Structure formats: structure tokens, C-alpha cells
Length: 211
Image 1: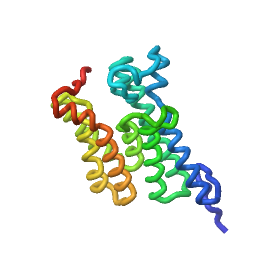
Image 2: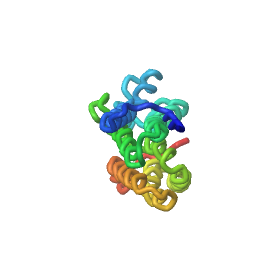
Image 3: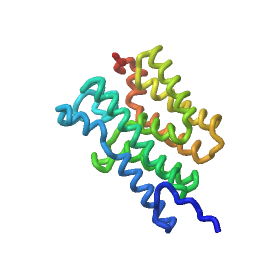
Image 4: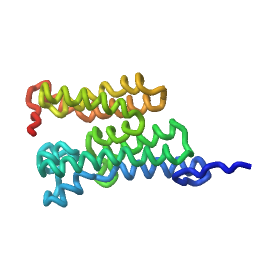
């Protein structure tokens, strides 16, 4: 009798317990405030009281410099990538649970328990998630972001445009309803969390990006 291959990552045998562990772990990892931690290491007591008040890479970049901005971007992306990849590689779950894990990690970033449920806008974490779910969508979204940034020099406009296009690209590139559904949810929440930026864009008061 041929033995079944062991999964790369182990979860409990009980499916409900495995699901609960996956979702809670994804949320708690997503909730790690990368920008707050890195800014504090750089001597900024609370990045939420500096600049735009956001904990994401753009505000850290403006307040603490390029290196910490890039590290924040990478850290926030890993918060989305690692939980989703772990669940996918476990061999225990279908695409629906992978999508739920992605949503949990994303919600952790946007509403982190460690910061009173007041987090970032989720763009970098969404990037990490989509690197697992649909790498081609990441490429397409990056091109859209880069073009919009080059034309108008607004990070927020580039992020909103890329987020709006992401569900369409997942629909085109992936034959997976669960991936499309979670990408649509993530895109809608990213745009919603940029509503203050949208208001400033309409008023012409949004800050432009300076390299």
C-alpha cells in the first residue's frame, strides 16, 4: 500500500480546529504593525503622529527615509504572503480556505488588534497575498501603479487604480472563483480606506510623491 505524502506543514486533524488556527494565525500575523515597529527603531516614537498618520510604507518613507520605507513595504507584503502560502502548502485546504486566510491576513493589517483596530490601507499586504494567488495580477497591477505614478505623481491614485483593476485581472488570469471573490473584497476595502485621499485628490490638496 502506497503511503500518502506528508504535507509540508502540519495542522490538527479536526477540520474546524485547523480552519480556526489558520484564520486566527493569519489575522495575528497580518496585524503586526511593521511600520510602527521600524519607525520606532529609527527613533520615531509613534509614526501615527507624524505626516499623514498612516502606518504604511509611504508615510514611513516620508518620515524615516527610503530604506525604512522599503523595509516597511517588504514587511507588510510578507504579512500577506506567508500565511496564505503556508495554508496553500499545507495540503490540507481547498482554495476557499486559502482565500479566507488571505482575507484574515488583510483584515489584520487594516484592523490590527495591537493598535486598537486602527491600521493601514492594505496595499502592500494585498501585494503579498496576490503574489500567491495570482502573480500575473501583481505584474499587471504594478504596471498600472507605475504608469499612474509617473503621469500624476500621486501614490494614492496609483494604489486606487491598481486595486480597482486587480479583480478584473484575477478574473482574466485565474480560473478560481475564490481568488476572484477575495480580490474583489480586498480591492473594495483598499478603495474605501483611501476615501480621505480621494477627497483630497478631488480638491487638489493631495500630497505628491517625491523620490
